[in-house]
Amino acid sequence: MPQNLITVEAAGRALGVSRSTVWRLIQRGELPSIRRGGRRLVPADATRSRTRRPRSADVPALTDDHPIFRLVGVGRGGGNVPGARDKHGILDQ
Image (cartoon, rainbow, N blue to C red):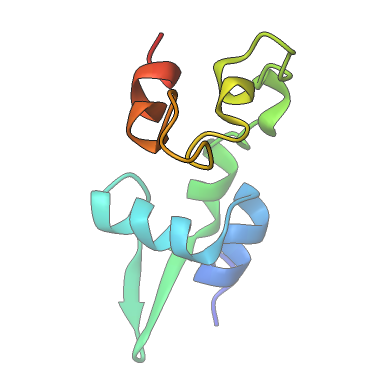
C-alpha cells in the first residue's frame, strides 16, 4: 500500500472518530477517498488537514433545576398528574 493512503480504520484513529463516522464523511464528500484493489483508502493528507473533534467538554453538567429531574416518578402516579403523557410538556418548558 502506498505511504500516502491509509485505511478507513486508520483514518478514524487519526481523526479521533469511529469507523462509521469516517464512512459518513466519505459518503457526504467531506473526506476524499479512492477505491483500490477492492478497498476504500483515504489520503493521509486529508486526515492531517482536518482537525480532531473536541471531546464533549462543552456539554454542561446537569443541575438540580434541570427539567429531566421533574420526570422522576412520572408515569407511575396511578393516573395522577403529571403522567407519562405530560413528559414532553415538562421537558419543553
